[in-house]
Image (cartoon, rainbow, N blue to C red; front, side, top):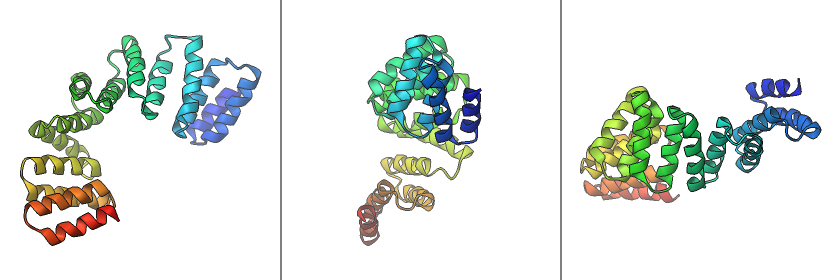
Length: 231
């Protein structure tokens, strides 16, 4: 009953209260599987990834092939910037559910963060084979293509994401970066400016906009953006 009450509190967004209820269960039975797993989920929502990791490790000690434990341990490790180890758990989870789209995308993100863009793109493509319109796969594939300087291909991905969410500041910025690298600075500036409408203090956007303004000989305007970027 306490675990169910905790789950209800979690669904209501009351994660601290939920954790208190799960802890009451774990005081009685430290290996109560559902309480460990649900506590890990609530801790993850609260960005307490070290503590969440401990909970998922305890579930895996009970059931080493528990899909959610493997996947969520991978997510916790990724949130702690331990991408190489995260990848090992994502791969184990993929052996159980090879067509899990969110898992494929997160596997790609960790590959990208670990510096392997080609591998990352391959996982995004696997996700897109299952659902060609999956936003996170298209978006992150576009970002990985930018890192490999495939700007035309990246633009194709970014345009698809902007069809779904035309006000996505990060995607607007990324499209500007592509255009700037293709020498289309005037058009790039328009996308940097759109991005700043939704995230006006983002230093990287301010700085990159300044760089494009320099390229079209608008030096005084460029300096204003450089000043804002370091303010």
